[in-house]
Structure formats: structure tokens, C-alpha cells
Length: 281
Image (cartoon, rainbow, N blue to C red):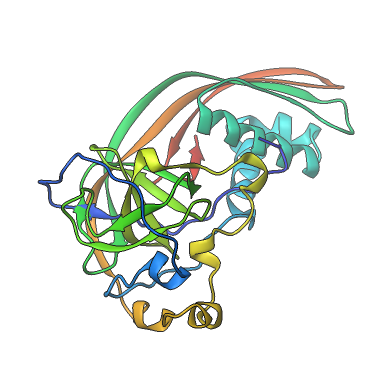
């Protein structure tokens, strides 16, 4: 992942279910217009605009590194470009759980960011879904752009017995909000869960495309209408908000930062919130 990667800004929204879901998967659907591909979820879909590239989470991480997590030492010795690049490398290490090496392109500063331990935590969060979409407890947070590896149905619950509410053609992109215990992915549009797709049929988008808006978030009312469906009809004024159990990750990370003024080593803790952002302490 490039250190210039902007971080995901996603309203906290995972879909959620009350249990009894089938574990079987599915694939295959004929090519059709975007309207039938996305499907009519038949319920209220609202939420704050989501997508890649705003840089808000990156700024939060950079500020934490400079002002608290690594102390004032790093803040005084790295310029704004380096702090932003180090924050992006931190995001990469936290997302992957693997060590990441960073080298400044202009100052000669460098760092290694090494996750040394991880654990899963479960917390109660307020999340949103379309009214006809099932509730799922204990979903593991993802909040990353995914794409359809092959055509795949979108369903109202995480199982083949759930009602079909749309689907994706091969290559179409969406925000994967979370993964259920039985291997289905919660699909989001503008911060609201609009259905589930079987996990083996989808996957993370290539690194180079991760800053682009997803097809499902970016489609406009006008372009949707031209493809045969009324976007307004599936985005009324309110979604269902509810408290659910969400599984996120906490990691302990070892930093070794070198500048022209010397070397500093720190160990910090980071926990993922329900919207996918990492918080350093």
C-alpha cells in the first residue's frame, strides 16, 4: 500500500441479524442493468456520505503520533509531509498486522512499525441498516472497498434462504462493512447496510484503486434513472438504528523512528472503532 493512501471515512454502519442464518453460499446471475444489479432494497437507506480519500482519519493518526502516542519528540522532528506519510504506514501496519518500513522521500527520516500482539474485542455500537435488512450480532469490522470477483446476489440476510434484494456484476465495487460468523459480507451504501453477499464471491479491491469511490456509493440519481431504476425510491428519509455487538481489533505496536537528530523507540496501543478507524493511545 502506498504511504500516500488516504484512509477510509465511513459512517458506523454494519448490518445486523437475529440469528438462524444459513451457511451455504451462492454465485451466478445474468448480466443486467445497474438497476437490477443493485436491486430495490425496499426500505429506508440514509447515511452520511462515505468513501475514500478525505484524509480525515489520516489527519487524526498523524496528530496522535505527533502530539501524544509518540510524544513531542517526533512532532518536533518530522515535518507535516513526514507525519502524514508515517501515519499512512501506521494504518497499513494496523490493517495488515504485519511490520511496515517507512522511508521519507525528502528528509532522510525512517521508521519501522511492528505489530507485536493483537486481540479481538467486542463492544456495543449504534449501527444502521435498511429496514428489511436482517440484524447480525458479533460482526467483525472490515470497512474497506471490495469488488465482485464474479457475479453475486445481494440478499436481505446472510444466507441463501434470505430474500434477494439485488446483486453485483463482476468487477463492481462496494464498501464491505463487516463479515458475519457464517462468512457473508455486509454491503454498505452511504453508511447504511443494504444487504449481504457471500464472502468467497468478493474480495478487497487492488491497492491502486482503493482511493476511488465505490460504484455503490458514487452512483447518482440521474445515472441510476438512465439505467432503469429510481434511486430515490430506495433511499427514503430514515434508516433503522440499533445497538449491536461488534467485533473489532486491538494491537500493540512497536515504533522505531530515526531522524537526523537521533532515534526514538516507543510502544503504543491501538484499537479499531466500529467505523474502521484506528485510535492510538
